[in-house]
Amino acid sequence: MATLMENNSAESVDLIVRAQAGDREALNALFARYRDRLCRMVEMRLDTRLHARLDASDVIQEAFVEVAERLEEYLRDPKLPLFLWLRLVVGERLMKLHRHHLGTQMRDAGREVSLYRGALPAASSAALAAQLLGKHTSPTQAALRAERILRVQEALNTLDPVDREILSLRHFEELTAAETAQVLSIEESAAAKRYFRALKRLKNILAGMPGGQEGM
Image 1 (tube, rainbow, N blue to C red):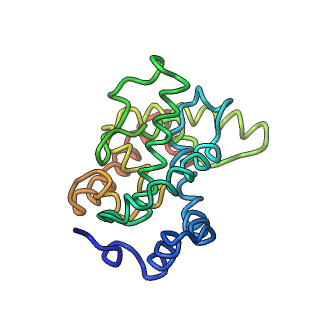
Image 2 (cartoon, rainbow, N blue to C red):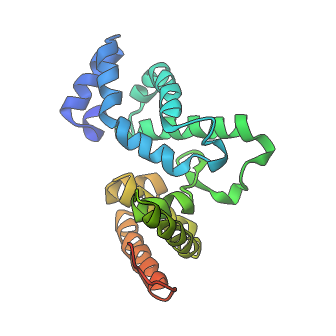
């Protein structure tokens, strides 16, 4: 059985122990430490049809309640670093919200990527493309950016779903190679190779498209 110290820093362990003892401030501090990264994860995976109803903060707030309720479950067998466990809880909450709001309109199962014990919504190519291109505010730039997003999205759609997922995990969620390997249940060396291969393939595809890698 894994131990807290094996998978977490001493500072995190101290906060976890205090949270377990009922210290609400410790739990808040623990969650706040990872909130921005968890929000990015949700933004990459929230179905576009729900943007008018939900945002990442809504999902995170609902997940926080579940984290408080399930902390003991994590402590019984902390086989994952705390962040990856929090990410799992948030991802499961996001999946439940997708099912609640979309029902039979949900994406095909093939649009989900199997993680841990179940499936979480895959990072969308549209969200990935938007993140890769960054944000521009002028009307002229906005029009050009819209065209480029479509071009990058088309390129991303030609990648293997796992390679798209690795780009999201490493590039935007800022997971390490080791964390990415744990999430996808593959060897760390394989995760690193797939990441660099996906980046290279994406650049090659874009280089062969009208406009090339302009704006990237």
